[in-house]
Length: 200
Image (cartoon, rainbow, N blue to C red; front, side, top):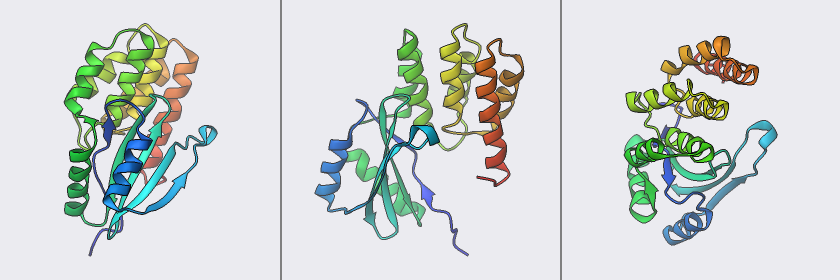
């Protein structure tokens, strides 16, 4: 019996940041019709998104992440081979940072704002399967003396949402010296529980 949940490509993170115009031009060149637009709602945690029909049962999603001022693409579809092939088409025509490049970006970032942005960007571009390199970066950042870095690392866990992050979140929720960080960790940990139990 075929899966009722669509297949999903890895998130493709734009090299320069937001790239709405570039994606619109690409979709027009491919003759992919606009399917819908989702307005940003920061109060509900809803990011801005555009969607195009990229073929039979295929959708290209362009999303803008305001935490990192970054745009990224995701392809969804009912067949994995078609989904991944369509993602490859986008990679050939648009300028993305590879996951390895995002890891390097996170490693060389300096200053609070740059480090926070790099943490979110590499988390957005994470593979679907667990990657120890990213886990270690986030784990180390959760012990940083700067609370802004720790908070960015918390939010970074929510993008790949690997189950390996759960114990880290629970530990921060109990032991972080900043009550704001503890509360954020608790909220994200609860969201993890809902997701793994099928509540989301």
